[in-house]
Each structure stands twice: as C-alpha cells, then as structure tokens.
Amino acid sequence: MTVLRYWAAAKEAAGVAEEEVAATTLADALAAARGAHGERFSTVLARCSFVVDGDPVGGRDHSRLAVRPDSLVDVLPPFAGG
Image (cartoon, rainbow, N blue to C red; front, side, top):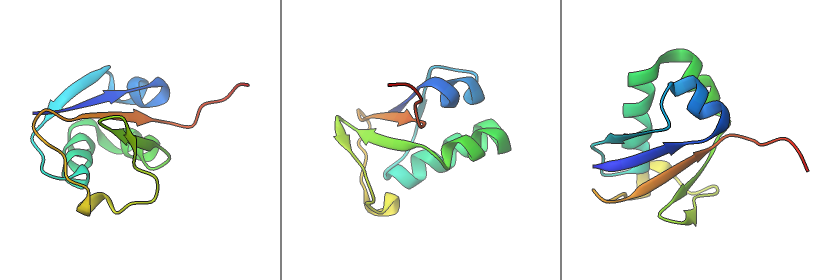
C-alpha cells in the first residue's frame, strides 16, 4: 500500500499523520484520500505540493505519475515562516 504522509494543515484536516491507500498513480492516491476525509481536506489538498519517494512532483500530471505499493508520498501544504 502507498503511504501518504501529511504535514501541517494537511495533517490537521485529515486528522491523521499518515495513512495507506491502494493506488497505481498519484491521482488515484489523492482521490482515495479526498474520499476518506471530505471537503475541508480537499480544499487543503488543492494548495499542497507533493514529494513521491523523495522526488518533488512539481507540475507533472498526477494521473501519469506512477506510485508503487511501497511508495511514500509527502503531502506538503504551503508553509509560513522564514
């Protein structure tokens, strides 16, 4: 199962620090998370950036970005501070 690890506001909105989902793409993984956590979480997720197995996703198409059963996806909302 792919592990989604939530940080800051994403963690707060999800109510968990991490969870496992069955997915073959990043889009599948995020859809599963949206379904599990509702609209507030989806709003936060829309502002997040993602790192899959240590590689920043950037502007790549989430539906074309494969994840493996042992992948780790960091879900990073915008951070404040300096």
